Length: 92
Image (tube, rainbow, N blue to C red; front, side):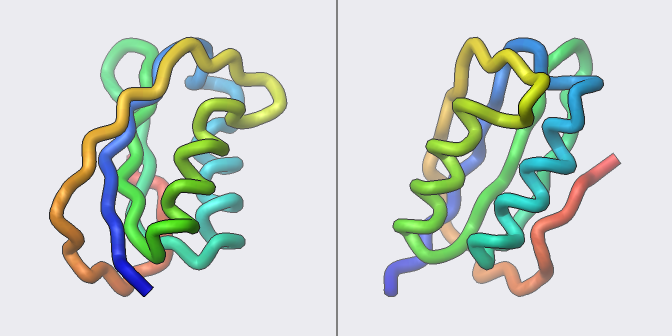
């Protein structure tokens, strides 16, 4: 199975609505690696790595987000996989 890594920047109402916690839960369910963090201002950024189809499923999830979030945009840039093995986590 091919490994894929993306860096995603999510805009909209995504801070203060448990977006990162829900993202961590979803990524963990999918068996993905990487991290999610708040950006200065109001966005969220996530580095997601794993099986290509699961990364694609997570990117699709980012467009919806947590129940209270209001996503207005998701910018995705594909990166070279780092072969991460650590569980998906929230960076503070």
